[in-house]
Image (cartoon, rainbow, N blue to C red):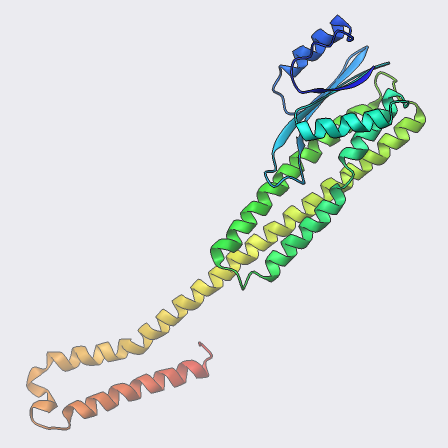
Length: 280
């Protein structure tokens, strides 16, 4: 029996009551990832990450497999209809081949999506100077969250395929194991690509933070130079103001102009000295 159901308690009379009890007991669990191999059956469960949906929602998928039966329980309605059609088109194939087709279809366009996602990350980095800082930082945060979901998703599939390839119940022949190994290798490749993208986004964030630190240091440098330029003037004003009796402008009309000229000269000399030292 090869069937697909909505992810909810199952009441199909065609299913053996003992199997039905096992399935419903499993569906009531809330574990994210499950691979349990028993003497006569295997139970698998994982959360499916919809790469095509903008909402990026997580939906549960559970699988029951024994020597004759393959039962799938899918939470997402669109995916449910899609795989019902897939099973209908391949109803003459055995349950092990249908299981392989299911996972093959599940992973079908993932690499194209990750390649396109890498392009969008690269474009975001290229346009970083044109975007506002807030928009760029928000994009980095969004990239990190989506890649984290993808990492968890492929981790789940790796756990399941590791269990399948152990072939504890001896359900799979050599040819089926070879085909499952190809899918397992594809998952490893997808996981590696996601890890590389996460490292890339981390480098983008570090580069962004480094640029912020450089700009802040540049601002602090400017303030420091301004302080250094006006510090001698502050000292001159302090000395000049404390000696009221000797203020030249009280006795000479050239007192203020001379003081102003001396102040400007001090500023010019300091600016010339700082430029010579390449401090700005």
